[in-house]
Length: 166
Image (cartoon, rainbow, N blue to C red; front, top):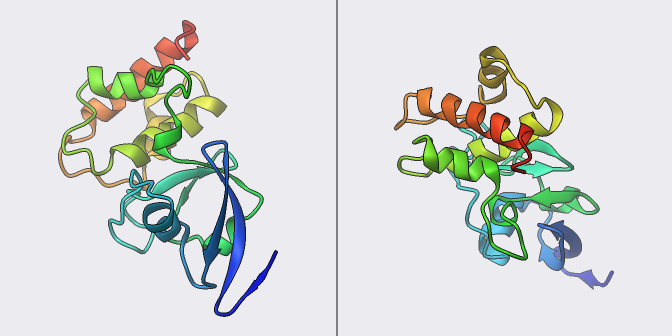
């Protein structure tokens, strides 16, 4: 790595692609994703990790990218909503399809974080109960749906994935 005044070149793996990005020591992963890599699916909602709008998967775990320093993400596998669809065909992931089909998307601001959190949940627990879904999305705020359609979406995605849909 080359030395840079005020910054450091960091190698990030985002959506299975390698990037070399110069980051400042206090720059968040959210800022790097949005401003330097053009990946705007993660949203800056609250900036303090309370709303879930900036959620990405880091090594398969949902994390608030507004709280993560980009410099600390080197060597980690980062998945954003932009990387969830099939890269070859562009076909949406079953969770994305379920959110569309079950009205889990309204304004869409919270949706990327909800979808990625659902992915982490279903990867580890293919048959979650309503209580387990509630616990998983506890850190997400949605002002449009009332959460009922989000529960339906995650449950439908679980069923679809069990039938081989993803």
